[in-house]
Length: 478
Image 1: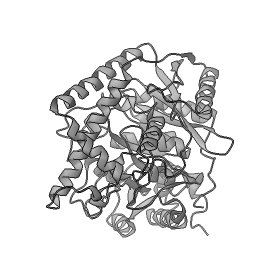
Image 2: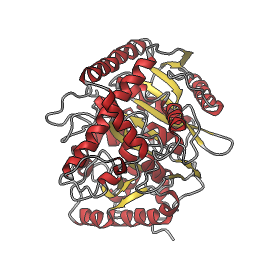
Image 3: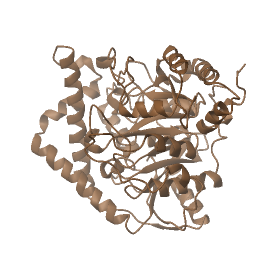
Image 4: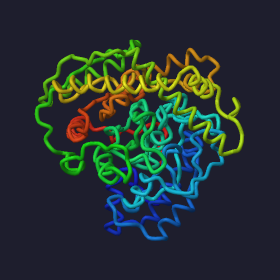
């Protein structure tokens, strides 16, 4: 029996309100989150590192009076360091890596009062749009245990969808917030490049393509968490344009009459599943019914050049991270340190030189300018989040012996999302569609650089018009 029977009817701000009103304690919320984790984790495998004792110590030490004071929280097992705890990056190579400091983002989460009780599953190095690390085994969707929860923030999305908690940390380097949000029926916003800090160890991820934020049940939680975590850290190489006012103030504000461009054709030429296309078309009609101007249009750029540039940048960065870890262990990198497709990607960096890398960065910047000019004519671009419904497990495993099948599945996962990692635009996946078989399919909305405000206003309007928070998957930690 649940200690807090209506726990999963609250979003994170709602839970924080209960703590502030002394209706529950932070310890009681933690106990509930732990109970729910233990109830469903054997099925969905979303939490890979348990930090229950550390969370109790955090509460005992006194929590700051932040916007999320007392709310249970998961860090992704990649892209965020918590001093004294393991961060494995989903990899055997990092299985025993223990951080000696907090990243700045984690420090901000702590100041917001979030209680960190574990780490969520990620594929190795975050390089697959499905979360199936050999180190821990596959993370499963609570909507269908035979299907992927998406990636690379699949553990975060599976845990939130299963109602273990209402909000969890996530990162996105090619779609890794939006893809699992789509696969698990959640709201997932990738912020503007450099909106949240990457330091102190690095100034950017994957040449500025990767950024951290969250997946959530509600739009307002995402906005409030961004308020708590956004802004440059000292020494950052660059930062996003400051917002005019708190992002939470945008939730419920009138978005006005937006000009919304729609495309259902991905820039990499992959076929689009009929359900994904239908989801976008229905979302376009919904937007039109809300008073927005909607028409078909798409930015035009050299997609093949962007694909090659992205691969060069990601391969070089992955190779660097693996080599640094091997050196720290006092030896050379070996093929069996990582999964086969991870090693293949890292090896591919040998084909390129410094000039190739510099040219690739120029391709990203040139593409960003094209998209910026396009969005000078439109307020928002609407697309399917993925070309494909959620994938069956196995196809996107980094240990899949069929590399061609893996590559095809990757392209059908990121065909609409990865462009906006390259350009740095904010983009969100909104859960507006479910298939006849009950699988969620997200719809992506992209804003102008620095303009999360418009996305939050539109998202709140869509949330009110077509609510999703009451939709629960078959596997729920009640």
